[in-house]
Amino acid sequence: MRVVVAPDKFKGCLTAAEVAAAVAAGLLARRPGLEVDQLPVADGGDGTVAAALGAGYARVDVDAVGPTGDPVCSAYARDGSRAVVELADVVGLDRLPHGRTDALGASTFGLGLVLRDAIHRGATEIMLGIGGSASTDGGAGMVQAMGARLLDASGHELPLGGAALADLDRLELTGLRELLTGVSVVVASDVTNPLLGPNGAAAVFGPQKGAGPSDVARLEAALATWARVVNDVTGTDLAELPGAGAAGGTGFAAISLLDAEVRPGIDLVLNLIGFAEAVAGADLVITGEGSLDEQSLAGKAPFGVAQAAARANVPVVAVAGRNLLGPDQLRGAGIRHAYPLAELEPDLERSMLDAPRLLHQVGGAIAEAWLPVT
Image 1 (spheres, rainbow, N blue to C red):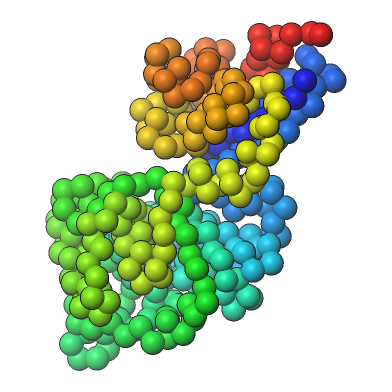
Image 2 (image 1 turned 90 degrees about the vertical axis):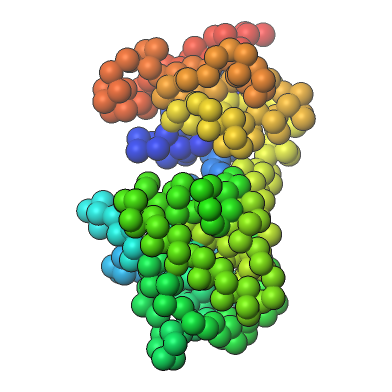
């Protein structure tokens, strides 16, 4: 029998690869002859590059800067002319020094440095995962690092950060357009918010990045200025497009200035790792993430895995730190059963510390329940 183990990370606890390894070990302890394919997945946030590396891409290290300008060593994945770049690894929330947010000044400049490095090394097809951003700068820092010039009324270059966009007077794109010649970009994101308004980047995601009510108002006004100036230069207003508000508005810059297409992150990752080929003829798929909840149903990794497995007519079960979905919701998502670690260890702290052993135990239970001895 053959099982495909394709979980996302347990955030703050285990990487997707670590989850897959623990579950696989539990399966094999009960079914030693079992064939187990470990295919860790991601949905465009942290873990996207790791998924590409697991699929055979090569790791490329690059010196860049984090969301507040501190030097960081980031990495992307490359296979010939194709590259996979992950915002979270360079300017994500985990890159904030000592966890201190900077709602008004945080920037995506470091992401632009990584993209520029990938292009200079020959990448012409780039998959850009934009989940987990620490900034609300509309992707302005990203394009600045790639050659765009953001100028105030006196002709001075704007400082980095979302708040600075309030002083934007004009945008020069010559350097950016030269860099992007012959390059195509696809954005991996499951966020459908527009750039502006009550469902926009500042209002919805700003507070998660440390923005208080007055900060949100400043960022909203600054992003509106950014959208107006971009529209003046490009002749196209894409601020209301679903996904423009992703990653603090990085989606807007990618769509408007990188000519990027936005697609569901899990779909792109599953295609990248060859999931359709791996699942064909399998007896069972095991997916999961740290918390199975309402957000999981909105295009997160387990839902995407379950939908892809359903197309191959392969049953799916899930592992999780906790499960907040009812049986009908799980079945509606294509998941036959969930195995939350909370049922084995209700104490959250102990569950996280002991997650590898608990997942090993869950793997054994899944083997007993779903993989009969032949």
